Image 1 (spheres, helix red, strand yellow):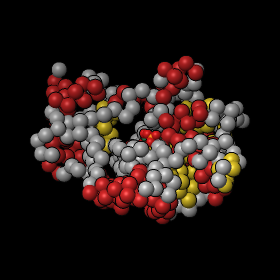
Image 2 (cartoon, helix red, strand yellow):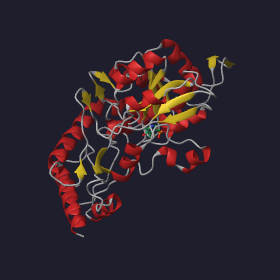
Image 3 (tube, helix red, strand yellow):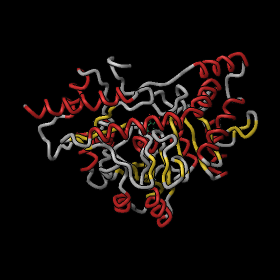
Image 4 (tube, helix red, strand yellow):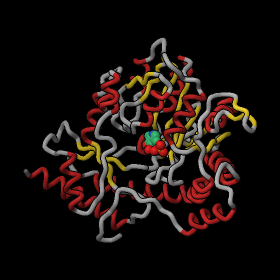
Length: 377
Ligand SMILES: Cc1ncc(COP(=O)(O)O)c(C=O)c1O
């Protein structure tokens, strides 16, 4: 990948994945068979969770989690305004109301103190995200959930293999959800997983995934077709075996990049809290817009593109500022100043496992040069 363009993300798919797909095709069994079952068992074992339910994508995983918890019209669910739209849309799917509270700038995750401020008589649940692969503050969130009798959903779509005080992301709430979209730390093409230790939630999740079918053509509750294919599961089983190795490569690249960027003015590299194991689904720097108003994030991204470095902005707009949420009149319950600051300043840089030290040094050098150039003007 030497002097060529360095993309922000790239799925790693090799012979083993190809062989797994061919194995499924030759078997003639394409839906809800042994591969899905084995993937569920292996994924649950990897996380140290009792149950895993494989589904079509990370969005329906969230939908199932909230339906399994019986969130419905009239309920409020506290969540972060700074995430991918699927997180809060899944609350809308229930006819419930997302209540957005501000984030912590250090990790970009929901701030438990702000959660406390937003709890009201209709609050039923908290959906927190382990954004970019860094776990949210689950000890504080758990305490709040217990004190106020709220359900806790962990959107771990970006955090395969991340850890929080020795426990894996996905196991930190009452229900955890994952996405296996191609840019994620592991992929199945499209895919998702619902994870829980609670047998009744697992049972409901399985029913919701498959038209509420308790026996063949006997439908007990309103369900959907949210199933994962055998092909996707077969790919996922191969990817899961490589996940730790890939995450280590991401962490190695991230650590070097942070070291190289630590002296670059105006740039705040990502942090890792004590007790947290960040898996750098995204390696996200922030332009310090307060002390460096001259440095425009989008111009920095442009300069990096010219230097052959792919970047992305996760996310340029907080969810309450999206046209849909404006129209629905769902704003921030506590001022979302930090989330807005993040949306103005964040920029994701490549650290994926296909990059080695020379490429990471190139990324750091290009950032340093671009910041210097944009600061001279
Ligand atoms: C935080 C978060 N939640 C939910 C999702 C939804 O997952 P999917 O794209 O598989 O539906 C994604 C990923 O796209 C995500 O990043």
